[in-house]
Image 1 (cartoon, each protein chain N blue to C red):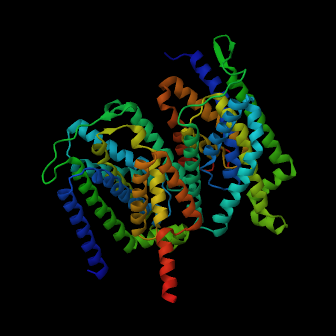
Image 2 (image 1 turned 60 degrees about the vertical axis):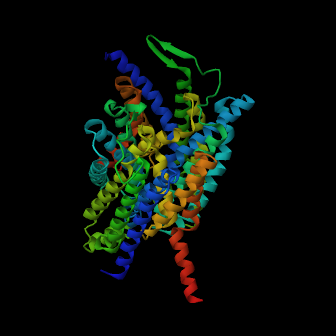
Image 3 (image 1 turned 90 degrees about the vertical axis):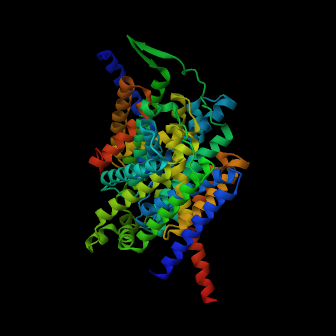
Length: 317
Length: 291
């Protein structure tokens, strides 16, 4: 194992240990309630970066995958009273199938056409769910949490820990992709799809793979949200705000390295939680939009681009 | 349950609705269809125009269509500024900038949406005018006058723009820049200035389109999300940049929506445009009358 891998896994273990210790020591539920959302956005942003950052396909349909994750969980609870682990696992499978579908449907599309197609897909799925009585239709559905299992003393704390596990999983997969042939292939097809194809990069297979992995992780990250709010309705599960948040977090962090979306999600997620409590949720979307526009105009490579630049100029000094 | 009368009713409503969709999409047909700008914020600008019309109508009792005409110059300026910003930040910087250009317009759309919410709240807003609320009867058919007004203005707008683009000097220059930017540069013209002007026209049209939007039905801040589907569906189905195609595609969308509405109910309506769009993108990406 390389030295950087050892450092990465050591960091991941320390992270999980700290999260676990928090759930055992802290009594107040609020930090977990807010922290869950931030961790959820880390998963979504990192997963989005696989397709949106490495491959350069701007997915506006994050809400489609998120909502499919939520409603897979709802369906499993309604029909089979399935446990949380099963909900997440099945959501990942459904998400990857949806990703495959998106990939096949958008084979010939690039740029804005791909982005618009992903929004379109989200709305079509949302409308279908709205008209589906069994999962509550437009009015939504109430869900009952099962009793929490030891060692956790509350369900929110357990969800917080589960989301932390998903963070480690998502980052590990994304990091693996970035350092492997897959990541280099995706970057090649982002820069010039035709040239990549001509030099023997299997662009089609790579693109489908990226859609599937990204979709599976976003749906898995969304699945626990059903139990988190104990309620699901199409309007909130498929809200376009998820798409713009994740897009902003990834681009503001920087999409050339997995640490970018992690930083972006933590930074913006924390700001959002703070603004939503202190001012209003509208102002929080406004701040998000303004930051997104400022960053894509002024700092195209995001925070990691800015930091990298100052590090390089520091070397020269 | 289903009858010829109902179908006829749906088709007539659909054609009226379709011409209205042409009016709200025609700006995008120029900015996205001809100039290749990924203008996802087009529907947000449209809703913004509706709120401008609402403000003039509510405070000064100005007729909504006249109000639309009055705010058009402001939207022309807004278009010039938006294109300049887009050009300097993205178009000039080359290939990788395209991805961020899309994100840029997505962000702009959300900023506009939230600013409207902060200023006007999330409630629906509507305008008052003498022709709103009345209807015209032909036998069993009942056509609201507001839809007829929207139909007539929309049709007029489409014809005027179509003539402008094919007959005037500037209109032809805009089509030339869409066909061969490099060629135009070699002729000694400045393609960026032409594109900026064209983007201004495309945005100015939204003043009147926004007036029609609020004449046809009340508006709310998040209405732009549905219109992303409708406008892009129309422009892609039309074939990028085809003005006559825009009218045909709009009528197809209008009739499709109206028939589905009659047969399956309103809850399926938002998906129609998006489903049509997905179908067109997958099967015939160059559209009906593609260039």
